[in-house]
Image 1 (cartoon, one colour):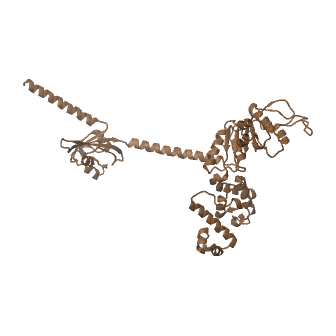
Image 2 (cartoon, one colour):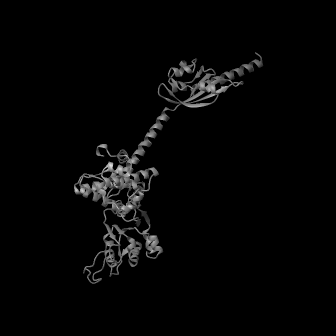
Image 3 (spheres, rainbow, N blue to C red):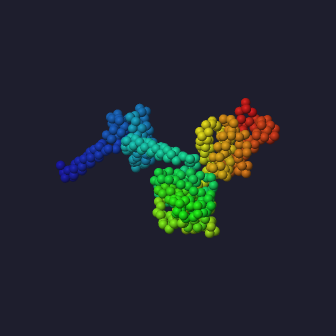
Length: 467
């Protein structure tokens, strides 16, 4: 054998070894490798492909790829689409064993641009898909638990008329609970009757001082001299008529608890100076005394006045304002949280029915009127109205006739919220109900307003039998 022949034989041996190496690599690859010719006839299937599809190579090699889908082994089969489009295609397949397989088909082209081979790489994604489903379920469960915890937390905060239906009140309650954990001074602002005292009690109840006293004093309800002695107390013999043993002030009595100073804007300037000392130095000096007594008290103040404007007008001390305004909380009026109106009505109705041992239910028309009312007196006015309706209605069902003279005419009308159509519908409903009260029957209303009786019945949603 010549040297040239020996070189050729050696190169041929190397080529054969390289082919065997590549075949072993393809056969033992963890990913599935599937090879078909340009016409879709199966040429090669490795062990990874057998494992992915649950079908032996002997069942696949020599078969046209369309047979696999027809027999229900693999769905969808992409080899034909890859050959037809001459493009890389990636997708997921489902096997007859329920597996999810991620596949990528790649066309190999000859010099004339014809597809000579289609190579498909496959990987079993079943476990990953299952993990994703488990993760999604876990996230869903976590969201449900979070929602339930939030609902329970809100439910736990519903006391003394606190209703957390509106986003504004939910945010306010969450802030109040956070603030309750610390001893910072809080300044509550808002119109009269919005529920500032209720928020104050919420802060006290949720605070570490909950077992301590909760003491409230209205700074605008007492004369200046009486307010001073009530707040700061006095020493024996401090003034004519004083008790011989002296008296503890409310600030002292609120030790380790909460002192609620309502209508703080009404406090006289000289008392503002004494209160500032309490907030700054945490000491109190009784009237007629010289000793500074240490006090551990949390102060919450409330007002329906604009303290900032009062500071500008020099009717309220700026240094006291900034001492009080550490954590400002504004309680919005009922007109700005209309989502709370109906829940409040139901809350108060149930409360007064229990209190007076009565069975009363408020009709839908009355609820609609109460919802659209502007409530200038806020929650306090709403509570009083509901109590009046419950105790004065002679029938179990509280109807429109029970509202006569209850609501202020100046505050009635549409709420100003919603689309034009919704507001017009509410206005029309109010006119029809007013006409119904005046004329007593749908026929009378129809005649007075110049519309058909059927329109009156439909717009008022009255059953035909009652018309």
